[in-house]
Length: 247
Image (cartoon, rainbow, N blue to C red; front, side):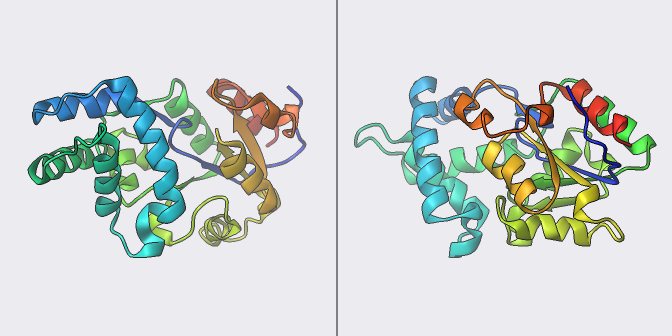
C-alpha cells in the first residue's frame, strides 16, 4: 500500500462499521426484543423490512427527523412500527411503545455494540503522537453515550453527531465544523476514515480533506473503481501504518 506524503494533524472517524460493529444483526436484535413483549417475527424478515424502511425514513425525514421536526425517538419508533408489520399485522400501541423504548435504550449501551478489532489500540497510538482525534458520524444524540459505554470516548477531542450539529455527511458543512474544532489545522492536514464510499470517502475528498476507505464485504466493487487504491485499508493496523508513516 502506497503512502501519501502528508503530515496529519487531525484524524476523524466514522462510527458504525468503522470503530464499532453490531454484536448481532438488526433482525436478530429486534426479534429478540419483540419476543419479550409477545411479538414473534422472523429475524431475516425483520432485517429485510428494516433496510427497506430505513431508506424510506432517510428520504422522507433526513438526519433522524431533525430536518422535519421529529425527535430521534419518534423517528426510531416509526422505523420499529414499520419494520414489525407483517401483511396487515401491526403492533399494538403498548407493544410499539415497549419495543421501541427498549431498543432505543439498548442501542445506547455496549450490549448491542462491539469495538472493532484493533480500534482502541489504534486510537491509543495516534493519541500518543499528539494527533487530534474526532468523530464525524451520521448519528443521533445517543452517540456520546454509545462511545462512552464502549470505552472509546476519552480518546476523542470532539464528537460530532449529525443530529446535534444539524449537518450530516456527505455535506461539506459537517467537515467544516470539525475543522472549526481544530484551531490552526487546515483541510490538507486532516484525514477522515470510514467504510462508506459516498458518505465518508468522497464526502471528505469533496471537503478538501484526505480520506481512507475501510473496506467491507458489502461495498459495491464498482464503487471501488473510483477510489485511489493507495487509500483503501482493510484493518486498523493498515490505518496506523498509513497515518504514522505520513507523519
